[in-house]
Length: 487
Image (cartoon, rainbow, N blue to C red):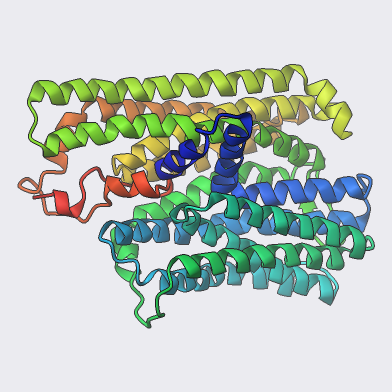
């Protein structure tokens, strides 16, 4: 994501607040566009219908939430591998296969989601045919947006990306308002129109950015064997963010619709609200923290490649450590303030959005859990710069497992303990991730000279750090030495 940060910093150099506000807005849509689209579109649609809890509205929200959550986890292995492939191709200045790989990745994402989509809408859910078809199509459209988001960091026109999501979101909300008529299938179909606009506009922009002929060669096949940790880690990290919701759908207080979709409205809505509190930290991380860290990161490895003295290398090693600690401190300060305000002002917030006060404790625990979730993400992103793929994979597996186990325990303990599973899992996972990060960074010169030394081990193909200066993406495991540099 450092490349995004550098581009947005240029945008923010204008001498007015609009440049700064625009940079933060573009950073949010470039990194969390699909998530923002879903949350905001659902919120506005529900608001325009007067907060209706009719069966049709619940069926509409259910289809969107089910598809959003499961497609994210199932698509993650594909878009993590594709991110790594795109990074390597840009480094070697051979992006001629990008259009082909984009279509290949869309096909793989569709195949990954197909079994569950067939199970849900062809067998398990008890729905009318029109809602089945709309829900089936919706799952693949959402998955396609997840996949296309990989390529957004390779585009320089972030304003166009932001407007693409805004246009699609506006069409989805307004068409559902004027043509939905409180009918679930029609509302999902209107939502699909907005998603289709986003898919086609993003695809068109990518084809325009990379105007090369399509080929029949599946170039990413070797990457699945070489970087399998990225696929596994991507699945478990994204599933970890949803496993507590999936489990809580079977709480005694949860409800089951006639369509067989299960929900726990008290838990789901409170956790969705809590998740919104991390948006300022995500924007700041992309815009400021990561670019500062990457500056010292490049200078450290640049001095190694330039055969600088050990004393100078150690100086920049200390600067990397200082940059990480400074970024962590700034992130804790910002997210801490947002979380504190969310907890203190929760009654006023609930009154404005017409939520029940019984959800206060879940929301507050969710906000605290989101605080540590941001810190987990920070640790994993920094580890990815040092190509710690295996470590990140096990951190993601630990996050998923601990969240599942602790949520099951709190489910048995009763309503007053709901939310503690996600909170405690995020806390423990952060300390695990932070300890791994600090241990690796403390031995960074050793890893630079020994772990990645071609005279000590078999050469590996790594992604260039230069890619992060120009494009950057946090989902890939990245080495600090490019193939051209390992001589």
